[in-house]
Image (tube, rainbow, N blue to C red):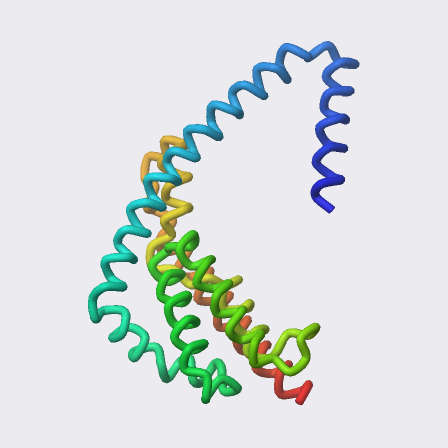
Length: 192
């Protein structure tokens, strides 16, 4: 859908610029946006490298094992269908830890791996299992202690206090997570 909408918006923008005589402004806007995009990409690259490096160090210590053990009761509650699949539960825990630490880019491959593992057990291959639906809801809420991507964006835009977003992010993601989990649990029970 977006591959249709974006070209339409671009064409309409150029047409409006031609009609209103603002072709120079649209040209300037394009080049400023390119510069901003490169600058933001470099900021993200540094942030991603830092946190992925920290995650690799943590993987080689016993900290990940301790964190996954800490999350075990929560994972067992959220994913009762996965009682026998320890591998999927560990991958889900790793994804949740990466999200909590604000490592969205590191969490994505872990999340995809967890979904593949859950899909292997899924009896209806063309339909999401209950565990897969719950996992998507949790990832969408993305409860974070350190919202690194938002802080990186705010820093790149010269925010005076880039970290002032932390408490509102905690509130928003916790509320989204609790509400999402609550309604998913209710809907899963109704479907059974």
